[in-house]
Length: 353
Ligand code: AMP
Ligand code: ZN
Image 1 (cartoon, helix red, strand yellow):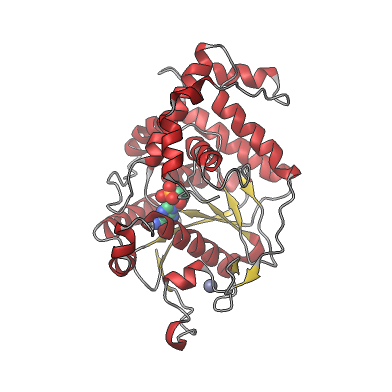
Image 2: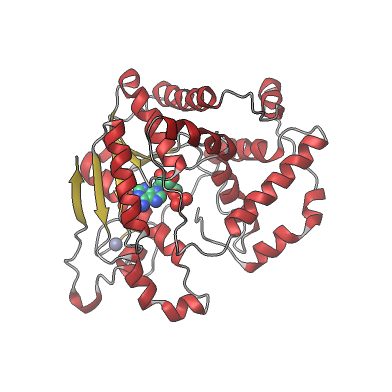
């Protein structure tokens, strides 16, 4: 699901308050106790560290029960509150669940922001005593911004979408090349992120393409796809926001500045829309609508068989693509394949600590 697949049509939809009075679909498969638990408001008395730890633990128990526990987990560590929280709990629980842990930072080449973030990430990894790997795309993001300046201005090229492609590609490539099918990549995506992907997907011009893969997206050897894990999938952002104080007390720094390339505030607006729907559903004593919708979609996912026949191998790097010319978006962004320079399939890489 593309996080950046948005249109002005979608934005208009969020402004349309009549959406809030749409009928609320019921979620027949949800047990009553769960609905009750989710109706309970988040108060200052909630024991946030215990709550988050329990969610991460139950995520790991599920992995274990499904025989999907990877030998090695790599946390994609941006230095933000979410991925730092994931690293913090995965480090605490690694001996109990028996996986090895490392961290990956992608130095994208965003002036000042990337180098500052790297310093923070190095401090986090050292405090948590986990090995840190740093990878860089061969073309830094600021160079892409320069090259595409006109298209960006005209709204034909979205730098956040390109950044998303680069991050996903490099996370997978790193994990696949180092650990193959024994490895998994864990990101800090939380429940509000997932809800906003879902709502953006629903309101996007292309319509609903996929419910959501849920907290565990299994890898695929044929496609060189690593398993992707989202341990905070069922944790609300407000709770992680509160948990920041604990992280700080534990001596873990956090990147507080925003990426200077971040486009508009559409994600913030979608999240505000979700909050409104949630308040409304509580007022009417309905089940917590946004989260039960997410549960419903996750439950639906295994019943939808996706046509993967369109998947091809990129003729330059060998990773999957759906492009007609069989050159993946990452290779295109990097300018690979142009001028016959197809051999530059190398990502600069270093290991810190
Ligand atoms: P974002 O796409 O910025 O919302 O980030 C989603 C998740 O991707 C984060 O929670 C991290 O796990 C991961 N991530 C984002 N940026 C980086 C980065 N520069 N290096 C490593 N992981 C990242
Ligand atoms: Zn490629």
